[in-house]
Length: 124
Image (cartoon, rainbow, N blue to C red; front, side, top):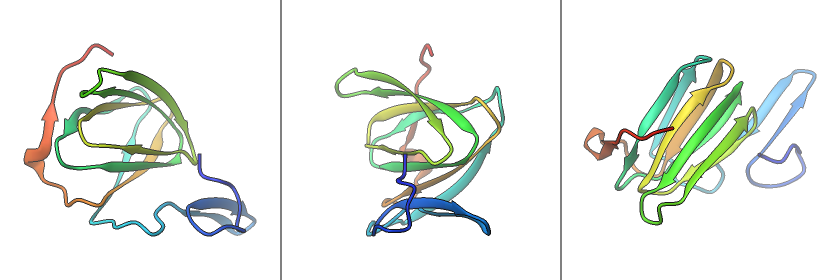
């Protein structure tokens, strides 16, 4: 979860009368930036990347993330509400499920390469 404050340098967010501000990338290279929505009851992902690291920021709604580190075999599940940020390293299989209608920003220091996305069917 990003800290809710104006008072620090770095990633943060806050809400005020005029609206919300979120600084999700600070001092990092971002060569790929994407935005997606995920409707309640649907999923996105089901893949991993050999080369690409990814950071996801939940702008609105809630998603459930299922993650599998392909190097260690460690499986993890996380609930990501609005304001959450998740960083994935290479070779982390991931799938996101919409708990509510959600909006998400994704960024990466690597340029997107469609040949780098490897799909694996997993039991979720």
